[in-house]
Image (cartoon, rainbow, N blue to C red):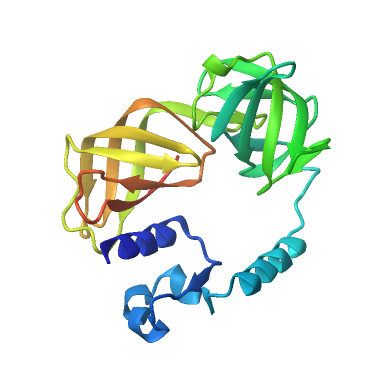
Length: 248
């Protein structure tokens, strides 16, 4: 259905090259092959719908992951935050880059505030560090719950930028029906952020699937230069994934 197609396009846009497909309702791989051909999903592993098999497989994969714990910097996009009596502000998220350590002083972006790591928990156990990809709870000192939002970025990486406008190159998916135009309101998805962005200018040369965009953002976007974000158009009907944008 259209939702499946949109998911495949999104996975391809973010470049998620490893994954598992579980076919249900008597659907065969041959039936979906034309829908995933040329995308990252075509390289995913297909396994039977067996909960025990899936559990063992995921545990094996997790055991092979070696998370770096000695990176000089780390970045955590916040997806949940709350106040705990006797502890204070606690945030939850998965580390996007590097590692964080107890007592690290982190920038709270967007904005100018900082917070110190009071403690780190993973699966309800205390640790001194957390590495990339790990689901982590962090108690913070020096910041209140009211200062946070879903998508807030905690980092000690000085190269991280926060901007309210962008001039960048966009690559549209081949299924997108028409060039982007001035006045359209797109959304930029990066880490846990979804930032509305109005197109102020859109130009292309021979192929309009590659465009130069000038964007005015509704709020600050936080990112590391050189990374890629996903463009979506919520009013796009059945296809809302526009493509990707290279963040300068």
